[in-house]
Length: 484
Image 1 (cartoon, rainbow, N blue to C red):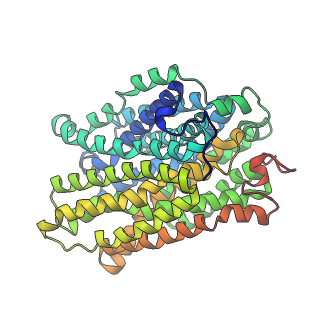
Image 2: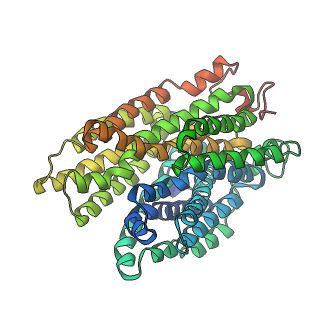
Image 3: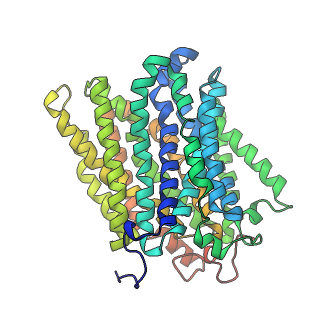
C-alpha cells in the first residue's frame, strides 16, 4: 500500500482536534447504542414473570428492535443525506434513548414491543449516521480504522449493561435498568452540539436538494405511496416476529420481501440486484454471529452447567475480544485492503468456533480455557465486522451513503431476528445447542467470506452495465442515477 502524501494523517494522534472530537462523540453514541440495545436480553426472565409471559413469547421482544431497523436506516439515513450527518446522529440517539426510557414505563407485552421498536429505529440510524460521519471526517487512507475503532464501542456498551444489571436490578427491579439508558444522553448531545459537519458531506452535498435519497423517497409523487408501503411492511414484519400470523406467515414473508425490494428499486433503479446482494451478505453475517450472541448464555448455563458469575465473566471476555478485534481489523484493513482483511479474519475465526463448542460439560478446569477461546473467537469473527460499514459504504457516493448504508445493513440485520430461531430449531433437531451454534457459525462464516472475497455485489453491478466496482447508480456516472 502506498504511503500517504506528506501532511496526510497516518495515525489517530496525527488527526486534528476536530477529527478526534468527532470520533469520540460518535464512539460514545455507539457505546450508548450497544448499552440500550442489549438491555432486553438481560431481563427477559423478569419481564416474563412480571407480565405473565412464556419465555418463548418474551423472547420475541428481542426481535422487536430488528423489525423496525429497516425504517430507521432508511428514514434517518435519508435525513443524513439531505440535512447532514450530525442532525441524523442526534435524532438517532434521541430515538433509542427515548425508546429505552419508555420501556421502563411499559404496562404490557404490546407496549413494550412498540417501545423496543423505537429503540430499533434509533439504533439503525445511529449505525448509518455515525459510521458515515466518522468516515467522511477522516482521511480516506484511515477509513477502515475509523469504522473499526467506532464499532469497538458497541461491545463495551454491552459489557457496561451487564455490569449495570448486576447492580441495578437486584436493588430497584428491571424497570430501573431501562431508566438508566437515558442518563448519559445529556453528555452525548452536549458533545454533538459543538461538532462540525462531516467535511466530505459538506463539500460534495452541502445544501443541495436534488441529488439525495431524500429527493428520491420523499418527492411529491412518492411521499404518500411510500408511507403506505412503510405501514404495510411494518405490519407484516410485526405479525411475523410476534408469531401472531398463524398460517398467513409465508404470505406475509413474501409481502415483506416485495415491499423491501420496492424501496431498493427506488434507491437503486435497475441495479437493485447490487443492493440486494449487499443485504444478503449482511443477512448471512447476522446468521453466523447472532445465534452465538443471543444463545451463548443459554448454552453456557444449560449445556455446560456454569453458574451466573461464570457466565457473566465469560460474556465479558467475549465482549472485550469483540472490541479489540474491531480495532485491529481497522488497522489491518487500511494496510491490506478491506476485502482481503475481512476474508482473512473470517477464515481465521473458524479455528476457534468449533473448540468453543467442544468443551465438555461440568469441568471447572475448562473455565479459563473457555474465556480464552471466547475472546479469540469474538476477536476474529465479530471483530472483523468492524470493517462492514466501510465495505458497504464503498458502494455508495456521499450523497446516497447514509441511507444506502443504513437501509442495506438494517434490512440484512433481519437475520438477527431469524438467527436465534434457526439456532433453536437446529438444536431441537440434532439434540445439541452447542453443535447447532457451531454448524450455523461455521457454515455461514464460509458463505460470507466467499461473497466478500469474490466481490459478488460489484460483479453483479458490472454484469448489469457498470464498469467499475461501484455501480453507476452509486457513483453518479453514466445514465443511471439515484434510481429515478
